[in-house]
Structure formats: C-alpha cells, structure tokens
Image 1: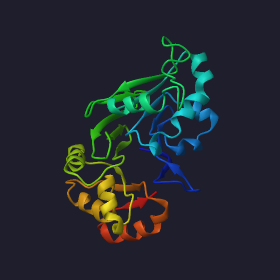
Image 2: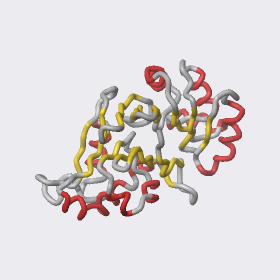
Image 3: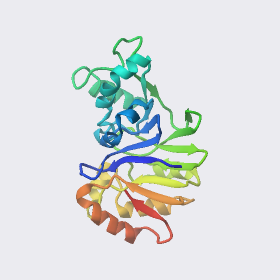
Image 4: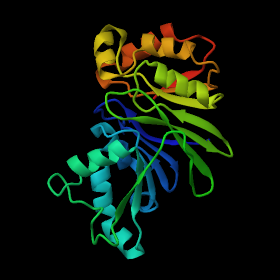
Length: 252
C-alpha cells in the first residue's frame, strides 16, 4: 500500500511538517502542518479526514484547510467529513470551531448545508472510503482520548499507532491486528527522557523495543515517526541499538 507521508515530525523543523498522511486522493489521516505540502488541486480533492486525537500537532492545518476550501465546498454542496472519536469531536467543537478561535464551519454557510460535518467513530468498527480503502480505528493509550488506525486496501495493510505510550492496551490492539505489511509507530523522545515520555504517553527507543517484543507477529516493516527534532539523531542512534537487527525499519 502506497501512503503519501506529508508530515511525520514531532515538532517544528524545516524539512517536514507534523502528522499528515494521504491515504488516497480524497482521504487524509491527521491534519498536522504536513498538509501544507498539498497543492491547491490536491486540497480540492479531499473529502475525508481521519483524526487520531485532538492535539495541535495533529489538527493544526484543519481550520485553515476548511477556510481555504470554503467556496469550493459551497459550490459543490459538499462537506468535508471529519471522522474522529466522540471526545475528539467535542474538543474540536469546544476549543477550535467555537467562533472565538475559529468560525464554526459545521454551521456555515448554514446549519442545513454546512461545509464541515463530523462522524463519530467506534473502536474496531470498519469504515470504507471510495470502495478501495477500509479503515478500522483501534484503542491506544495517550494522555487524551486517542486511537490508531488499521488500513487495508487491495495492495496491503498498514497499522498507524498515532501517539501512544507503552501500555497493555496498545499491545493488545497491535496483536489483534495480526500480520501487517507496515506498522507506522511513534518514538518521540530519547532514552534519557524516559520519565517525560512516560508522563506524556510517548515512546522512547527502549520503550518501543519493549512494545515490539510483545507483538506476536512482527510487521514486515516499521516506519518510525514523531521524532522530536532536537533529539532526532540521538533517537535514531538508540533505535539501532534497541531494535532487532532482523527487523527492517526506517525513521521518517
């Protein structure tokens, strides 16, 4: 499965933006600053956005995206559909699209024909997009309500952890997924910041290795994301020491 990585950074850096993955021309997973890589034509093709959670690095471009597409969506009489956990939708409504931080596009240009609509999702319930991509959210442990996604299409399967700490819940979810072509998983901090990683529900190389060894069926490939820019080289060095030499992986 070919997923276009628009952004996978754990912070601000010149080389890439934060979490955003284009699953197909109409479906985006997370809406961090990586969305800025899309052309106007590509932005106009978006119909669906899947969110892992409500932290700003995963939603930063969403308000401006809807603003940019407003006239296009109105003329098409279409809404951009955001799929997210109920608590994530509530956070967006209360703290972002509240007519203070940003207009409530779920009511504009009218409540009857808005340009933004929400679909609350349920763990382990599959959702299908364009008859080619099936997406199933699964529980992970983070400091706020969050989920990962299992993506299936005719050319393969991908698991996205989103942001997660080392927990039985995350490990049980990954084991329930079974064999994956690719697992996209975070590793935000180096080992010396273990206490911070634990309190923030993120992974270090050591924590990722502990999680990995408890996954019954290793993925064919690991894509490691969300590295904090000041620690990128240190994290990669520690990943080489922590992960088994037989496991193909790449930090992005």
